[in-house]
Image 1: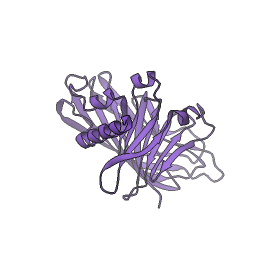
Image 2: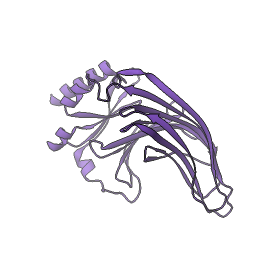
Image 3: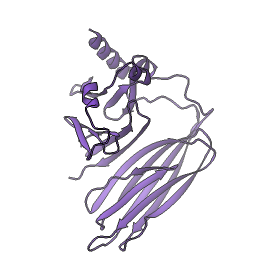
Image 4: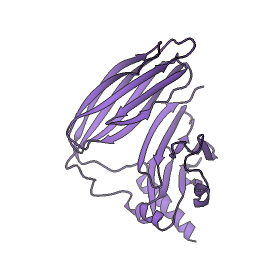
Length: 272
């Protein structure tokens, strides 16, 4: 009975809030658009990079989108974006690649927040180098003042012990800090069925999570249902893949800890 009440609660929350992530009180957003080209190789060398300084005020919320495409000619390749000192891998596949990644960040101090796009090439038997062209779009919402909005749309979920890790084509939940302290441990994913009704799609139990190694020797598939796959990475982080969907996109969320101490996400197109 308790489980049924919980399902009804989550269903009502999803119906009420959908994909809404709350609002930011402030001036209309400012957008910066940059285009660039990075290349590295063919000889062994350090990464080539381009740095884009973004003028910000403390509390500004940044929405960063990277559209990219290029070629790989090195046996060992480094491809990444760094946002305010935090580095994220840029996914690629094959010798020709393209995709779109999305990130969010919040400025903690006023000044120039640095975004660096970086590519590297290590030696291979017949190296020909790596190249990538890109368009970087940075939207800025100026928070006034830089504090969370007064109305938390997820307060009811959190009161029920549910922490919304991410909202992509699915909704990913973990227990809140308080629920973890009470002994709860799980990963729960909800998705729309063929009738566009939200329902539980995947649930990973405390016993299943506790049985996993802290740092697997290789990325470990924990569970897979339809287009949803959950992994534990060699870094100790968890990764949820959704796709490829009908549009060819694969949505990826990576989070550290339960509940997450750090979360990031990106989207790419699956190779046909």
